Length: 303
Image (cartoon, rainbow, N blue to C red; front, side, top):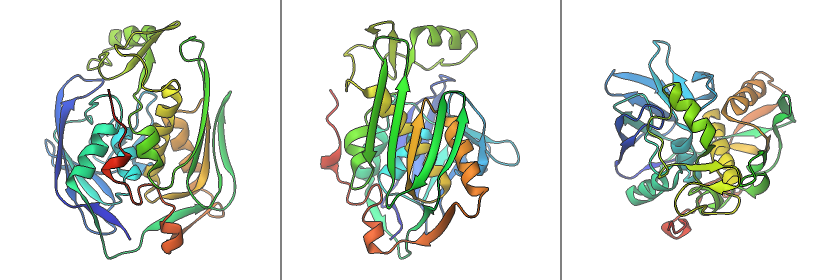
């Protein structure tokens, strides 16, 4: 069955790029509502869906026809997908989702604290029927048939502290919450300085991102996982795939891929009517979706 929140949940913080304070309120919504942002400062609604995405290299940004935008939505979208929430109204008083600690863990905690309510409507899922792939040089993003959502990701950075990392996960039964939700966004120190010269990353600190320089981790406390960077890339991928508008039954492979490539992949999938089908999930299939049966005990302990 489709799910929504049992009660409202509030998140307050700053935007990663603007540094401006922002307040975000998640509300319950009826079946088939989907995930919708409401910019309360503009009285503007923006649907969180692949065809509302505006290309952006640094984050995932959605916009409506009037030009109202909300950016850096990937972490809250991953948290909703990873908790099995298909329907919510997100009221936000500015143009950027709060970065919090740079992961999705606080969003997940808030969602589980608010509670999850089942709705009297079946979950509709998108089953991938054939392989669809997009490329950009050495970067690849691909979806291929599978009975459940699987994510396979590989990164390769020159920085010795990151290097080459890969990880594969079956996303069923709370795997996102246990394995990925607390993995933080990351960047190189040189990138931070360059972005700030361009007026970006003004809200970025060593408290909400992992910052690397050569073979060093500058963030106090170091890494939560040896392979935290690739885990965070998988977190981002789940959030970007959630913009399909329904859970995906397929295997996603990302090689050096980012937000823009995953969105290009969704465009390619939906442009080919033979590549996918939308279906009502029967109980056996529903049991394989991310978020089914998630509970507080799945949350990682963050030091």
